[in-house]
Length: 185
Image 1 (cartoon, rainbow, N blue to C red):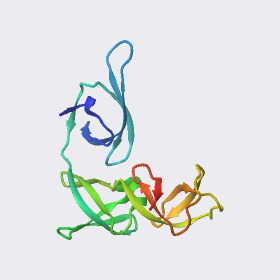
Image 2: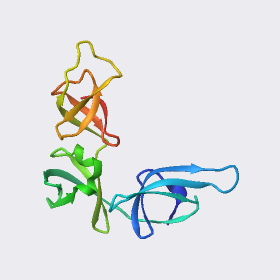
Image 3: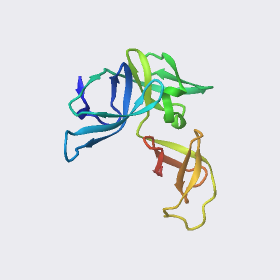
Image 4: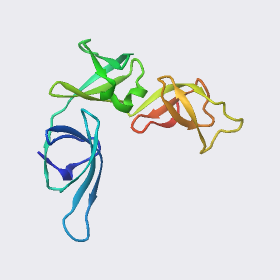
C-alpha cells in the first residue's frame, strides 16, 4: 500500500478496481482544514481522465509492474509489432496502448514494454530520439538563431515545430515526453 502523498507523475496504481496513471498532481494546503492532493488520473485501459482529490494519508493499492526491453519491428494497420531481443518472441500491441508514443516509433527503436500480471498496459520510449525531417517549408537565408518556429514532418509521420533554419534531410533530436524539438543531431 502507498499513500496519496507518494504521488508522482507517471505512477501507476490500482483505484476502485481499475489501473490508473498519475498525469498531474498538486499538493494543496488551505488556510483552514487539512491538506489534500488534487490529481488528474488516467485510466490505463480505456484512456479516460478523472480529476480526484485525495487526502495525503489515504491508502492506495500499489501494483507490481514488469518492465521488458523490446525492439519495434513494424506497423500493420492499427497494430504495432515488437520483438523481445533475447527470446525473439514477437507481440502485437494496439495503438490505444501506445497513445501519443505511436507517432515517434521508428523501426529498430528499443523501447520498454510495461506489463501488469502478463497484460501489456503501455510502452515507454527513450527520453530523446533522433528522427529525419522529410518535409518542411524552406527557411530564409540568415535564419540561424531565432525563436520563430515552423511545422516539420518527420520520417515517422509526426508533425512538430522546429526553428526556421531546419531543412529537409536534417536529423533532429526530439523529446518524447512532450514531443518538442531539442536540437539538431
